[in-house]
Length: 112
Length: 115
Image (cartoon, rainbow over all chains, first blue to last red; front, side, top):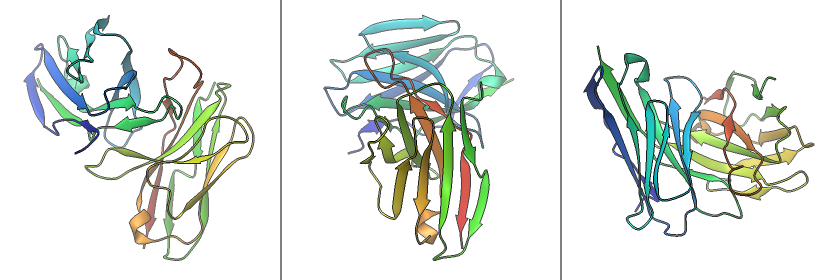
């Protein structure tokens, strides 16, 4: 079983719609959760981080965390073609190491 | 502020050759990391350095060595390159101390091909 799981996609949504990206993790003791966006041929870029249960909003992005269900999600409102990218979920599972464990990523396609 | 820089951007090696990938950060971060990214597999941790003077193995350390030269620089060495090491290599850094300071920032990557 992979430690951080994401649906590889592609997830296709029309421009202006809400894109919902999901991630589950195996380590119940995980404390820190991150969403990165990666355009083809580029490095990962941090979009959001969340540490506490509930929602965290930043502009068009909302991260949701449910530690009881070991589930973290990213909502993108008013999706734009420029949001088309691979979204990587990452979790810090070993707080001593503070290294990220990544999911394989979900490819998002926003159709104009 | 350049953030995290990596050299070279591209490299082609023959099996058995050696090389060093360089990484530097100017954000006064304590912790630095090396990841590799293969198609469909996300990023996997090779080695990390929690602070200057310390290094530890990650998920896939075999075939690699690292040096934390000073607080700014963290290098990755392939002693005898193998085709299985063909990948994109990313360096990252973070303050690494306390909740709220774990956000990692990535360099542009090195695309390595081993023939």
